[in-house]
Amino acid sequence: MTWGRRSPQDRPRRRRLSGFSGRRGQAARAGEDPGFPDDDEQRTEGLVGDLAELNRDIKLHPADAYAISSRGQVYLAIGRYDEALADLGRAIELDASDAWAISARGRALGEMGRFDEALADLGRAVELAPDDPLVFSARGETYRLMGRFDEALADLGHAIELYPEYAWAISTCGQIHEEMERYDEALTDHNRAVELAPDDAFVICARAETCRLMGRLDEALADFNRAIEIASDYAWAIGSRGQAYLAMGRLDEALADLDRAIHIDPDVDWTISTRGQVYLAMGRYDQALADLNLAIELDPSDAEAIGSRGQAYRLLGREEEALADFTRAIELDPGYTPSEG
Image 1 (tube, rainbow, N blue to C red):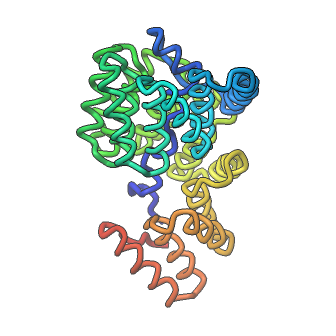
Image 2 (tube, helix red, strand yellow):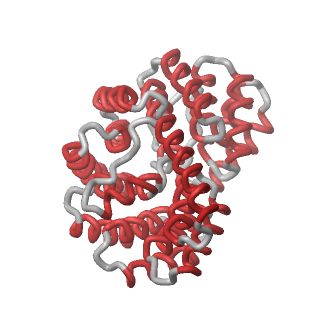
Image 3 (cartoon, rainbow, N blue to C red):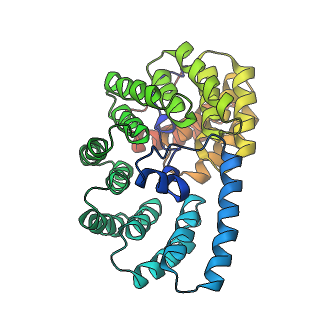
């Protein structure tokens, strides 16, 4: 089979807004690089500790806008968006001029796909804090999620003007250039980000992804290995290394990485779909079909997963189901071409 074509799961959609929240957000406001956590498990434990401390503070001081806003940002960082919105809304009621709380609510709304509301909040935050790079970065990230790449680059570029060593923003510009298939520009951005933050697993992994999509697999593998050395349970890096191993034909190593990534984070469609592709390449068609069915349940619009399931059906002799999947994949992505088994 052919595995080199850029597919929906190749898009850099795994990393979201964790770098804006909590102590790292405070660091950026103090003029330091907020960076990204070195280890997902370590970061989660720290946030849980923050949450317990904030709960105690709010119980003692129920009208403390700063504590309520901070707890909302912790909820945002761990993906508990409804609770984040409740806290951030309450904080804004208490202090309508708190750009940080308004920006955080905008980020939560963006993560929930409520983009018009997100942009309204983020626009207000920019008005209140026109010299805060984090506010511009937040709006830029929301524009990225919406596919409005030129506006995303403009906001991120302004954030970088305000804070030239902002490695996260530079790396995110690289991801946008990657999504625009401007790979040389993406690699330039990533190289700069890694130069600024050489021990940051996120920026290293982001560069690895671009190298992988450019077919520079040895360089990609070296970066993935480094990212995982820094952050041993970094599911994005582990799953993406599995994709690189698949492209290199190193199927056993690909399967081991994807098993591990799915164990760490079992609800990510692209890792499950990629493992299904590995099973296809190994001739384990029933297992491939099970994974691809699950991936499609998680993301019914993933043309690559649907097309791969079509391949599994075809190889199992289920021609009508294969044809239906190939037809659906082409409807979703007119550029999709079934690979040869």
